[in-house]
Image (cartoon, rainbow, N blue to C red; front, side, top):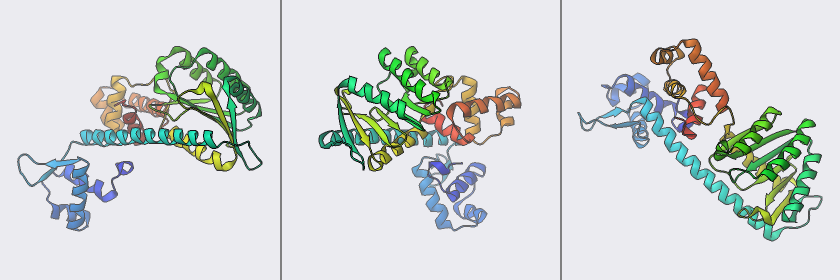
Length: 320
C-alpha cells in the first residue's frame, strides 16, 4: 500500500503488525515475519522517521503505531511538499535552459537548431504553420493563469484545424484557470473536441511541442511579448518532450471540478486506508453500489489507474 511512498514490503509488514497487535515486541514481530530482529529495528527507524510510529506516552521506550489515516495523510503531505519543490526546480532549470538558448541561438540546419522569432506576430505566424503541419500530436504548457481573449481565439483556431486532421492535442494549464470562465470554457471546448486538458499547481514557462520534432519556447519567460525561440532536432526536443510527459503525469484531468464533495472525500479517505467499498458504504450510510460508482467517478476525474493512486493524486491536489 505504501510502496509508492518509499516503504519497502518489510517496512509495511512491520507497520501492519504494530497496528493490528500493539503489544508485540521486536522479537515477536521478527518471529511473525520470519526475519531478524535487526531488520525489524531498521524498519522501526524508518517508520519513526516517517512519523508512522511514535513513542508511547504510557510506556516510555516502546513505540506505538500512528493511526493509519493520520499516518497516510502525513506521508502524502510530505510527498506533496517534495513534489511542489521538484516542480519549482524543474521550472527554474527550464527557464535557465531557455535563456541559454536565447544567447546562443543559430539558424536551424538539417541536424536541428534554434531560430529566434522577434515579436508576437512572428510567433503567431509560426504557430499557425506548426498547426497546419502537425500530423501526430501537439503538447502545450499554458502557464500564467487566465488567458487573454486573443490568445484563446488563436488557440481555438489552431487546435481546431489540427484536431480536424486527427492530431492529438494535450494541454496543461495552471489550477487557477478553473476559476476563470473564459479559459475554462476553452479547456472544456478542447476536451469536447477530443483533446485533453489537465491542470497543475505550477508549470515551467510556456512551451509548444509539435510531433516531437519542433517546439516554441519564449525568448524571455518573464515577458512572452519579446518573441520565441523555434527549436528543431532530436537533441533539443527530447528533454522538452520528457519534461512535458513528467508534468502531465503529475497533473489533474479537467473533470467536472477541482474538488471533492464531503461524501466523496470521506469515501476516498476510507479507501485510501485500505477499507472495502462495503465497509465505507456502511460508515457513510450509502449502498455499496453507490460507493463503487462514486469511487469510479473520482478515479476517472483524477486519471488514476488504481484506488491507492487516486488517494495519492487527491492528496497532492489538497482534495483530502
